[in-house]
Image 1 (tube, rainbow over the protein chains, first blue to last red):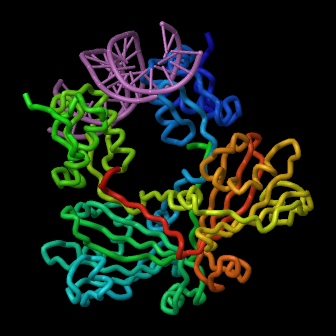
Image 2: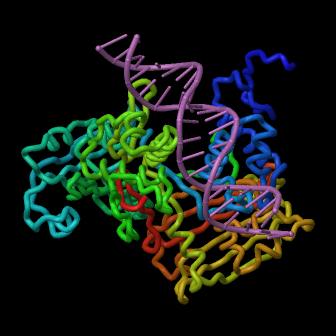
Image 3: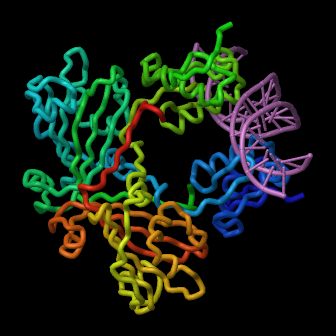
Length: 257
Length: 257
DNA sequence: TAGTGGTCTAGACCACTTA
DNA sequence: AAGTGGTCTAGACCACTAG
């Protein structure tokens, strides 16, 4: 028998360690991932059948199945009923990216939000359409500037439905409101949100506030939030300097997934 | 007993239909999603325990667990061992975007790729660094213009490691090579890829090729692909007019997930 | 201590593919 | 007909949280 001490290394063995805190299905995921990464199984190859994996690693079918489902979710393999499980080549088209970099900016302690403007206005034609309300309805208009160590990074404009029965207005004016929007702390009233990322260039106002040249590249992140009656409750957009934000992602086998 | 005919409606019942082609765990996912969407369970609320759901819907614990795991993956609920399963508010920071719109552009029949240039060159300092090769090494430089119905949409530049033992060069010159890059058809040699999305503005050459104004907003999608020895095999970037591409997504409960 | 989620078993039956 | 993945069962044991 192999003496199993504390295994401090993260290197995957070729056996399941039943005494590990790491679940068996997860160990199996890592074993198969590394075999694929090492080229033992190449794109297009068929993996051993589930029954074979059960015998090889001494786990039940459900555990093997769970591991394989995770690999499918990760886009590493694909399954075909009656044929087998196959290694997928990396596909650019399946790549996904997230707003983690943006979120870390909001959760950063050094980030401060300065309210430039926050008061009731009559909804413009565009705002009214986005919020599904009549033109001229009174809404709350908020302009914020997010700074990191004094340097402006993001300019945010937002229209809010004015509902006196809700504490929305006061809550939204908090400097932490934006962070809450990102981590969902205060969103018990909101059901869903829609997001659109576009490439844009800074106009004069945006450039002045972000202390960047007019015409500089920037990201626009438009957002619309809905309440549980599917009525828009908020519409707005973030403008972020292009040289301050980039989205990264990977396809295929990458480390520590 | 309820007479169960063909249920053409997609509306979820409040019971599991054991004769449906839809798996029980999936039916349970939809049932719970609609209950949350309907406001029966609000953000912060605790869902019924797994044991209760087993009894309520007459399924085994593993089936309930699988359904809940899917809801966790979808970001709709979160679980806490010993406490329960809780409905999550929509969080901007957890939003993910995919390149589906970009991929559909490549798989579109009306999209054609025109090779502007494709021959061996000496690697520039930057290309050499990105490809981890000595400056001056001979590499293949390819410039492509992707058009849709005659209108240029994407400008692509790419440096390829020149390896005579591989059919890479010929394969990459095919007009379908880019589509393959996206759907992975020909990537049995590639292990992984890295992607960086940035906001940029068109320079003079890009503007001329894309028939857009200089300084117009655009997306830059830089990509690096690696072989199974973790050596870079390809480095390049797509430039796409900002008015032709946008990334959309949703957070919280949305339809037909 | 009771209740919760987290993992896992050792099978079963089914649908599908291939030969 | 044999082999494959897809689903599901009816429990088990564990770790964690709460009263």
